[in-house]
Image: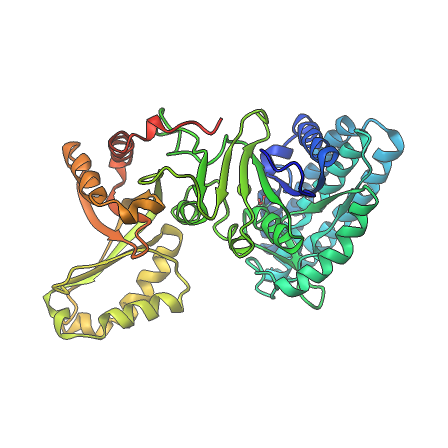
Length: 478
Ligand code: ASP
Ligand code: MG
């Protein structure tokens, strides 16, 4: 990878599956040790896979008053961690130390679940405390595993490093403060040759109140720390080979993309490609720090490099589809005379905090349609029906229609800007396959064309476009 002379600092992140059991943790520890032997290395780890979900289940059980159920779930998790720990850490003293730490974390979890059950009330703040226990359990285990490989290592809680706002369940970093704190805490360790293993997902407010960065937020933790520490690169170690041209479960011929731009990767994340948390690239854009997506189960593979400019290969890079979306349309000839329909529609959506994935309006103004994720659909529709109740009654607005059986497919590629004909080729390829297009949108950034189709046509649509743009010929990033 040719950057031998520069003093190097890698921030590596390991996702839940990459620390999912004892064998995975051993593999992760080896990758960290290799990194720390060739340069400086900070690791960020997720909870073992499935653990965060289980913790949230426990919190919800407690909220409904079922303290017994919640505590039983914590016991199950304790047993899982104990048996993993036994395999991961051979050294008795090391194991005892980690186990004591884990006991403290579980004791805290029990107290919070009992309190929640007593009050039958689960505040976002308490949910953050409970759901973030998993990272506080995995980090000490990974640190002990690295230590066993002969490299001193220390687990750190990111609440000591990442300062956030107080938006519980989806906090954002305050970069200035984060920089100061993480410098002060991390650099002295690195200078002593100690490898820091940091909990992903977690931050803390200025007052020290624990927060989380949102589900899947450990990717974000890694780039926040990468930017704060001026890392040479951030490597997201996961369970797939990199960013793929399409979902391999739907498209056999999907390939790993060797190089991709920040913008392309962000579009893919926005449109539901599951490799990256959508906010991941935000912190590194300014400093232009490269982010790699690599497979911890096949570390010999190169993976995907995400950089400001990407590779030279222009045109369409990848396809993605989101299935759990709902299309809502508001319209009828009457809305021509109602110039405020668009404004009222979108302020209503904003009030209920729904995330709009795609908007399309015909110039005749007969119809505005947009899609939101299905999780947001019900409250959005309810709010719109309320907002337009009078207009519906007087038939100024004829309908508010809802179609849950749709999907959005996005064709993504930054250099599409300068390449005419991509929309034409896309829709021709779909036409040949008889895929019916319900709505179309192209962002003015021209790095995606997205369209709405029936959910049942997703595979056909992806196959047709994947072939049309020769994505099966992508030079593999492996
Ligand atoms: N453990 C957290 C989650 O499952 C964060 C992460 O894994 O990125 O959402
Ligand atoms: Mg993830």
